[in-house]
Image (cartoon, rainbow, N blue to C red):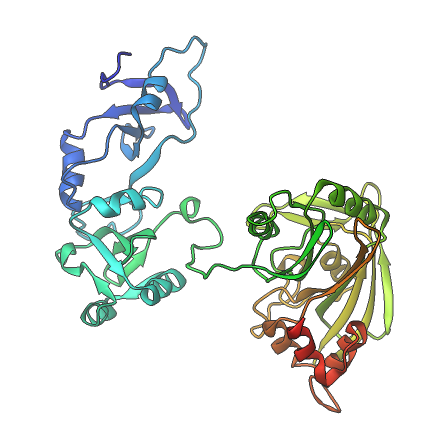
Length: 450
């Protein structure tokens, strides 16, 4: 097609199935103008590719660019129409058929999550701005009650309420600085976060502060990071690559696990450390808080592990597979126990995914709040209580590498449940000190100083 010519015609791609279709629609059409008027759009972004369902009903409007559209309109020399699963940026979607059906909603079109950042700055109506605290509340509760909206507006935490004209329906909500946007619906209950499960994903969106690792120890060809709970290993690596461009992972920690993360900063070191990990000569010590009070003082689990793809945010799940699993060995020692929980020092001799979590669950002592492995949720435990306390290896020059990570404050607060006869937290402090070479009273200060 010649540049600049965008005919209003179907494209030779099917949408989801043979009965759905895509068509190019012009912003001047009656239905598009009605949407634009409701949301105060002086100019609708274009080109628009409309998706029609099996009943011939328009269900979604996608923003594409001219180059992509020319490609999609090109004749395809194939027997059947290819499947177009997703295209462009979804701008508007219809409300679900069973949502607010008994109410008089002026427009059943609502902004899509993917297009909220495009639409927000262009809309003159039905665009609200929140301060950070109000946005956090909306994302965590999914609702700002109607009674609170005027109060938020009066104290400057909410702006743009008058732009909704007292009408129910879709809107776009953003931070004052425009750095974050999300689709919402004004309902009889108030301002509700709105989006399908496909859009929002799991977990729900959140405005969390940026989590960054700190450096515990740097030496020839390696850096050991102190990874906080909640930070992905890949993100910790990207952080280090800003200053050490050749950094690469030689091992990983689960997202919920905190502590020592050993990273190679050059190819020679990566090869040497990987070889040590493969032969099992890297010694790691973890702290784990498990349900139940173990009778034996120490023990080990030697059961092979395999992985299944369970889907979700943490997609893999380990399980015992004695026929085809990979060899896995985990040793453990009880450091303290009280109140139906035990604090363990765990020594994984191999490095399988979720090895400690799966092996301890198999023994009947799952980690507290580790619901993936049947660990009962505890209100006082908001994170995975697993911490890589110490790592010992040999660097690329042949010198010993020994690094320790301080017990994080959130984990220390959980361990406070383990109270010995000598006073709160004494038992676990003394036990951890035995592995760190510090006196119990000086443990916290010594670790923070490191």
